[in-house]
Image (cartoon, rainbow, N blue to C red; front, side, top):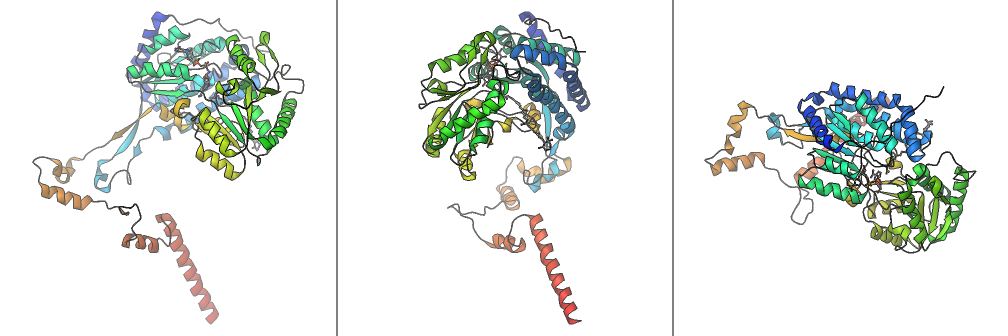
Length: 534
Ligand SMILES: NC(=O)C1=CN([C@@H]2O[C@H](COP(=O)(O)OP(=O)(O)OC[C@H]3O[C@@H](n4cnc5c(N)ncnc54)[C@H](O)[C@@H]3O)[C@@H](O)[C@H]2O)C=CC1
Ligand SMILES: CC1=C(/C=C/C(C)=C/C=C/C(C)=C/C=C/C=C(C)/C=C/C=C(C)/C=C/C=C(\C)C(=O)O)C(C)(C)CCC1
């Protein structure tokens, strides 16, 4: 029997209780209970089971807010967060362990000082989420915050109200709600939160709102992690597998109806293969949606009318030619996956971030031209995709930066929950996921411990200075460069000794193995010689 699901209607948190909620989370951090690894593990385990137990409500909410299919909601939101919990639980002890600092970080002369890095929770953090993955994009950072030992206030997007309400119930009934609370609401509630002092703000959303958040945070020197959008290019050369490129890039624009900030905005393709590529694109669409995209139970819808009209406007204003898709229905907030052939960087399809199921195809005559266009459209996009020969893909990686990149596919670099994810330049700063989620909310605090008995050696630092002491210290601790003023390596005694004793290579382990090989060969030679004599 199907579980009956009821989701409370959206209710914004009262503005006047927001300061008390923040203050309570800060107070809880000051009790130091979050510093216990066992306490963090219990919260993570509880979060895992909360996601499991709230599955019916979460799936229902995602269907209500975005018409997401259960398949997609499980794959990219709920299973994702549960895997995150398990990854953090399994690795927390290793992540949180002090890191001993020996050579080469600490000179041997200071080795008695037990230099180490302590992993300290930053404190009380604010997590602000977007609408497109309303569960995953707030709970995944929360896993990092819990793992690191922080307390947190979470502000989900008001554009996905059902998900926001389920999240509130899930977090506040299952986790320690003196440590983790949800504030629901829009701009006034976010402004009220921004008037509080945080130890870090983790923001996922548009560059415009990211700028507002970063400016406000700067007033109190609050660190921020910004996960923003981008105009992401795909490069396709004559050497690409065109059928595969078409299918994989279409996947990037059909999952969540293309409301994925790391999906491609535009495709720069060699003009010699553009016609064939479009044929493959149409074939891939037919294969994914045999009865048409609108009839598919798998395709999500655009979140609301404002975003529907934003995307529609890009299509209305294009001077390009629609070569695939183009259907839409406002009553259902449906937009068909749509490709537009364009020939100018001023086209509406190139100027705006699509953040929907539409993208454009821009024919170019060379990879040089493609790289020039991509750098001028957005020098630091969130992602890029390259489909070409090994050499061409390497060129794209070398000559164009991005937050992350996938060769020969759409955003696979962002589809595995345990590898670091983040933007670069104006597509974001800071990273999370996997160990990076722990690091994101952790302060690396260097600690030294000077033993009392070392005073005799260390007394050279005290006044009154004696230049003889300094000379002696310099002699004992001098480090000499192995290069000259032109930047060339000086091949002195040390260089040749290392080469000879290292048997041609660097590194003690390699040298040891090569010596073992030489000795074993010598021994085998002697044994064989003896055998021949006998
Ligand atoms: N890099 C990443 O991981 C991701 C980036 N994005 C980007 O997010 C955008 C779409 O998501 P949206 O939810 O529309 O983003 P948004 O920036 O409009 O909203 C994000 C959050 O900020 C709050 N907010 C909105 N306006 C505000 C204001 N004036 N002052 C204070 N807070 C405000 C919202 O309530 C929401 O919680 C796209 O640009 C997309 O590229 C989306 C998902 C992932
Ligand atoms: C290889 C063998 C197997 C395994 C097969 C597997 C693992 C197949 C995997 C298929 C794929 C491609 C799964 C796709 C997953 C997509 C995900 C999880 C998407 C996530 C989306 C996210 C996180 C979106 C975030 C959005 C953001 C940040 C944004 O807006 O930018 C077998 C089958 C096990 C057999 C042996 C061989």
